[in-house]
Picture 1 (spheres, rainbow, N blue to C red):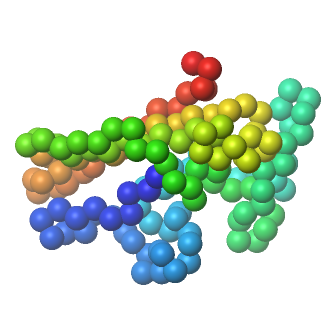
Picture 2 (cartoon, one colour):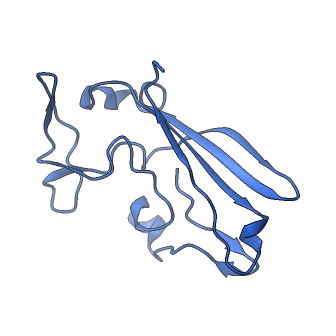
Length: 140
């Protein structure tokens, strides 16, 4: 899930790399959700509870796993709406449902939900969307 464009009263609120769609690099603008790991895993390998996992190498130098599995995939919309005071959309991503091939690279199933919302405060002089993120184990 990535809010890559947000415009209020003719003003762009987010940076969008001019090559955003051509480069296929969703981390170059907006609010990409880097999940289930937000940084790098050195050499694309880690051990958890005695088992070694090898998430795919994906950084530009091809030395590390990078940014998780969710940022390049479609999320399911689980809620959306608008009223006189706000607009919102909630997306959810779960490994077993949305990217089952990644479960071999991670110790457990994972699930993340993200709400992107803008209230009437967004339409005043300094618009600020809110983006809370909820992460849970599917067994929760």
